[in-house]
Length: 255
Image (cartoon, rainbow, N blue to C red; front, side, top):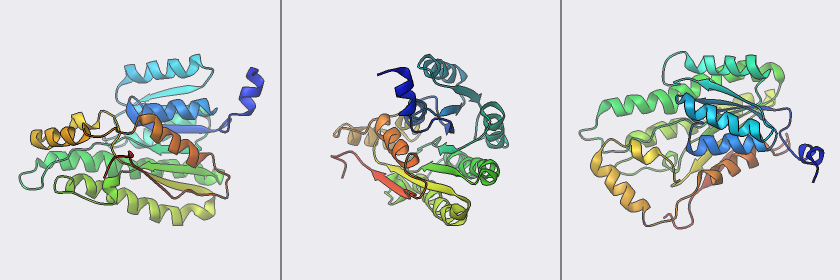
């Protein structure tokens, strides 16, 4: 297959995507998958060294990548991410709000800073970056917002109350947004993964909860980050008339 033929088969050629949490896990896999489909990709996360390596990998495969080393939990940084993307890559067609924290633990005796950190990143940063992206997408009369939620956005457990609250917020925000922006040609998709092999588990600060969760995960074959990236690509490559509202995806052996 010639390079010219490969280029014509890339479904996102000419599109610009911004992916948050791109330094590892689902974000990294999604950035790679979108780039392989021809999208120019803005990579957003705190760890600049990892982003630079990912950008180098994408460029080595003939893709285009721009690094935005930012902490979205800090006020004003979400707007900066959108502005830098548009300035560097010319437009913004796809926003993948993937950055997040899963700080599981009981409500009783909870470290309230865990809740604050999750609300800052999982909810406020997602909403603020979406707001900034819409300022670019609305004049284009096109765009796609992909919000990575969780199965915990559909149900809860004794140790997921705080985390589930943030992911239920993502679901409610996404559905209201979908209805609002559809007549502007902008699509909204929520991806709800079950257990995925990522770094999220290591962030849990409540020791007993982390050990219990890790023990549970050890009994199943978790999803890979690439499985979620494939779901994102599926949603954003549908014809413009199609809005994939929700994708719930679990490992086969997750109850």
